[in-house]
Amino acid sequence: MQEIEGGLLKKDLPAFHVGDTLTIHTRIVEGEKERIQMFTGTVIARRGSGLSETVALYRVSYGAGMERVFLVHSPRVAKVEVTKSGKVRKAKLYHLRGASGKAAKVKEQIGGAAHAETVTPEAAQT
Image (cartoon, rainbow, N blue to C red):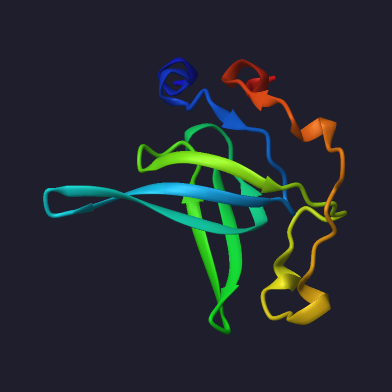
């Protein structure tokens, strides 16, 4: 089972953690046309492993909070970019859902050498 999954895993994913701000480029198919749509948000949860790994992003736009869950290794996900590295001490940031103003901020990690490397499937399985 792991051998089959290994061939389908994305190899060019950047290392990201909960609290980071990501931009995820998704492929949207409308009729016969295909376009790329970007979603930028703070990672509030990351769960699963292998092909079923998901990441939940949260952002506030036009006064309304939006949360979207992405399959990290989905063929619909074209690219994942780390915009900012956040410094947090929790594994899940569900408390950001209803927060506004300063309470909704995540401190930025400056220098983040730990976030600079790219995750390879071999390193992810160990």
